[in-house]
Length: 79
Image 1 (tube, rainbow, N blue to C red):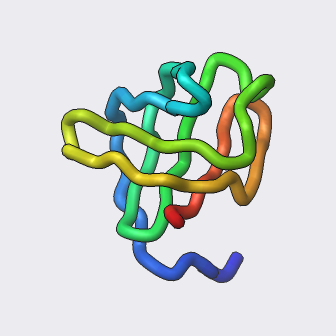
Image 2 (image 1 turned 90 degrees about the vertical axis):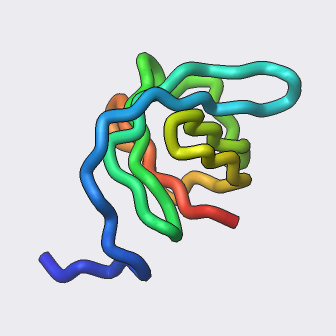
């Protein structure tokens, strides 16, 4: 399979938060790059298409949108 990402993603296992509309859902960041990330969640239900990803250990807080969903994982690209 050919790699179609803009930037190379590095594997990681960091705590993150999906923030939207005054609410928040915990997630695990499974890989990360300058252009996006793959997130693991307990359930992908009720997560909006656009939100802010906050990863305290990386001092990262970026608006993003979902580009794919599969089981308990979602892929996002940063806006």
